[in-house]
Every structure is written in C-alpha cells, then in structure tokens.
Length: 275
Image (tube, rainbow, N blue to C red; front, side, top):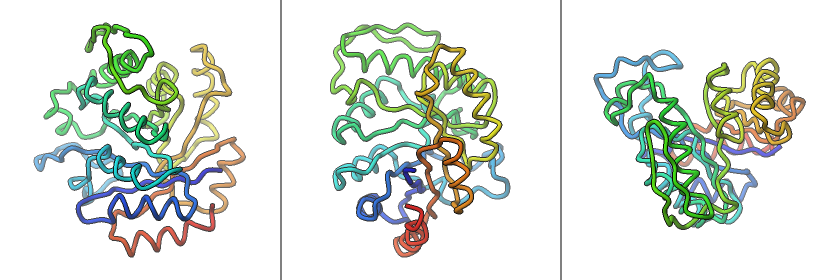
C-alpha cells in the first residue's frame, strides 16, 4: 500500500521544499495539498467538522505554486491537490497550470476535484451554489479538450472553448483525477462521468460505499479494474490500514498537522512505521 500525506501548508507552517524533501527521503509516496483562496469573515456556512473554523483555512498557500516548489526538489514524490475547487477557477487557466505542473514533474500530478462547502467563498468567485456540480463537470470537459492531442473544441452549458493549440500536454494525456466528497448518488455519478476514482475523506463506511460506487461505475461503461479509491486525511492505525488493504485499496493519504517543522517531522516519525 502506498502511503501519501496531506497538510495545510501556510505562511506559518513547514515550507513546501522542506516537507517534500523529507517525504521523499523517508519513502512516502506523495504530497497532497488543499485549497482555499480566501475565507470571508462574514461567513455563515458552518465548518463541516463542527466548531470554529481552524486558523489554517484562511492562510493556505496556493497549492500549484507550492507543488511546483515540491516538484523542483524531488524526483519520485507524487504530487496532488486535495482538493481543487474547480468551479472557482477559470478553466482555461487551470488547464494550463495543471498541464504545466504535470509536464515539469514528469507526470507526477493527481488532480483532486471538490465542490466546496463555503458558500461565501464560492459567491465571491461568481459561483452559483446550486449549479456548482454541473459547472465543475463542464469545466472538466473543457480542460480535457485542451489536453487532447489534437485541437479539440468543447461546448457545454457553462463553458466552451474553440479548437486550440494548447501546450504543454499532461504526461499520458491527462492527469489522474479523483473526486472528493461524501458518498451518494450525485457524487458517484460525477466520479463515473469524468474521474478515475474517489477521495473519501476519513475513509469511514467504505465497506458499504465501494460496492454502490462500483455499480454506478460499471453502469456508466467503465472498467471495474480502473476504479481507484484513495482514503484521504486519514489518522492511521494498524487495524484501519489492514481494513483498507482488505478492501483492495492501494493508496492512503495520511493527515499531517498544519504546523511548524519540528511538529510535522515528529508526526512523520510516528507515520514512518506504516510504510
């Protein structure tokens, strides 16, 4: 099983260069970074985990800039977003960022896609909350058109692009795409439509959810062998990882504290025995 990590990198935390080097030297499989452009202080959207919103949410580094630094100082470490709020981006610009990072890293990038929970943040980006899933699906279609080997047009409900020269291309034609979110028919339909698998946060209830997702996946004409399940932001224990392995899961992303260098390195020390 591949053991990757995720961390809220901020202006107060360990740096992208330091954490990337430590992960590769220790043998961890990857580094995934979350995204929030800003957190409106007048927010009414409740924090999904309950209680006060942690400080790091308003201080996150841009994941693509940070992952670019990580790519430059590593050779094998996988790089990913967990997640990118695709609806909050211009899709033509985002397609270029993704293709460039994947190209320069030698095909090491995974795009984690999410729909968000903070209505106020999304509204500042001009996103209508009720249509954000459909908007994301359209923008994924547009980006795949730009990543196509030949100039390819795309016309969707919310986004379109003319057939265009757009280089560099992601290594292998497109990066791996994993969609995050809670289990349910809408999420599973999105995964089957345009992704390679699921990023379930915390990894609870997978024994029941995976068969339901697989049914939707196969009904969409996808090969069941291609479906990837990557539990995300997991606090590990031997029993938990053994359970994932029994479900056929091949990669797990462990949560690191959004802290300075000393605390993060101590956490890595506790996770190293799971490698």
